[in-house]
Length: 438
Ligand SMILES: [Zn+2]
Image 1 (tube, rainbow, N blue to C red):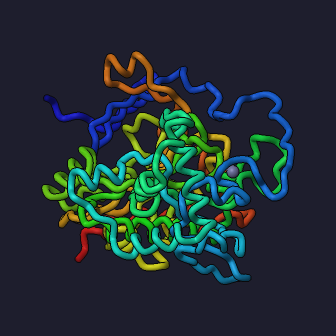
Image 2 (cartoon, rainbow, N blue to C red):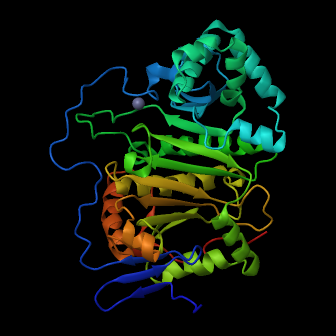
Image 3 (spheres, rainbow, N blue to C red):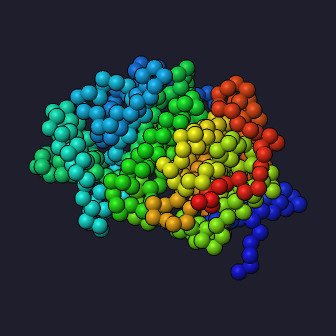
């Protein structure tokens, strides 16, 4: 195998890229770039029938009982934010949740996976929460209702469900209390001034403050999931925005899934870190700086266009010397949140996107910087990609940068995002990521 060149601009404008961390080969081919990017259908969007309170999907506020029991919620009291844990089911509507943390009805990695493969037992506090919950008539009704829904979706007939003992249904409900696939759900479905069905409220439509608390709650959940299950080695954190990105609801939410391994990609990156502790500066930050792909920064984070991803991708790196999100200071989390928020705002709510988090695994001794990828799902890999393992994307790294930068200037001017340095204002010091320091 010949060593690959990571980034080559061909005379005709084609940009060949190899991701330094995954080896994924991508070409941005000249002449394929004029396709429209937005996923929302062009033409006249359907007018929205405004409902107040919002009642469009199971994540909407009046429908708290359509998702599993709530582990936490964030409420706003004037300027202050407060986290309430394990709110009793008959008190759900006493306050309005800005963000809720709940289990996923259909887990990817199930509670049974942990039980059968590791003899995992629910922690005593979770067990007690379950007992209290079903001792409450509103709680018992909630569990029976969603269990009915889940069993139907899993293909059981009403007669079969009817025949099941209550104790059997309650045992199945353990996953809602002790499982480790969770969701963080935002309050609003549509923007405040929504007029059409495309005026969905995306990450970039939150205020900087709201976005920080969205991050904060996700990080608290991430830490708590690992604490509640000692077999967890990594918690995957991601956000699917709109259907082409895999979302089942058009209502803003993040997901967390606990895993008993790191996955091949992180394993490889940790191997690279062991060989070269500075690899994330060398092959990410410094490399991007040399190719003018860093386009925004603040004191805690930097944003750059990534190369060698199957979809056009922005990478936001924490500069902190901490390797895990929950080990970051409040200011550092705020800095990361601000930059991720700015990139979402510049992306807009009409581009389907995945947000993926990467950070030092629970049981890694080599520190990997916390970084967040935002992938624009504007192309669909097809037969060509399957046959060649070369992925074709419709926009070059420089074009992606130049699409985002003017929007960032405008957003900053309108004070819709927190202050940040943009394009040539970026200092681009060598080795800006400090994760390698003790
Ligand atoms: Zn909704």
